[in-house]
Length: 216
Image: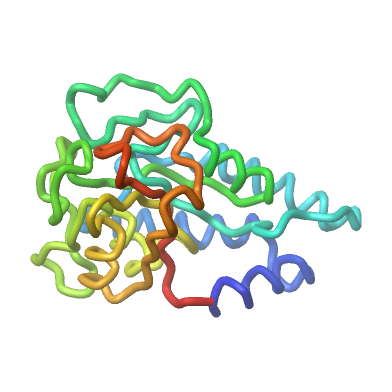
């Protein structure tokens, strides 16, 4: 099912947010070692978020527009308490002390953050081969590049490891890997999405945007 159908299923009680997270955990555990899309995982907190959402639904409370959907976040976008390395050894010990605005907005709408995604080091690349954490494989053609610099974002979607991923695009860094992996990526108009919390490559060009399996 697409994300709209899944969202409705969660809100209607046909499936739970926790079941959605658990399904993705199984896929990640099965596939990530060979694909290397995620470089840090946030299972415990994701399950806690899901349980809180399910409790709100069970109590008849209103939930957010993204309730129960699972997100992966590119490694140059700040998420509190997770390592935000921009795929560089230089920042391997940097733990996010705050959430980027886009992350705050996802959490405010009951989206769930399951982990941090691989990328070209400091977003300076187009193949996701320059990461300190090793290259990411293209799930659509193992042994080939997924594009970049948001290659982990595209690979995670193509491998069905999360519902939506959030990347950044300077000169094609969302659109390029989306085309390589057969998924949908979108670079919003400059200024439409806050860049606060992004470790940017080019302040005058960068935009944060989504990747997913289809336009819906």
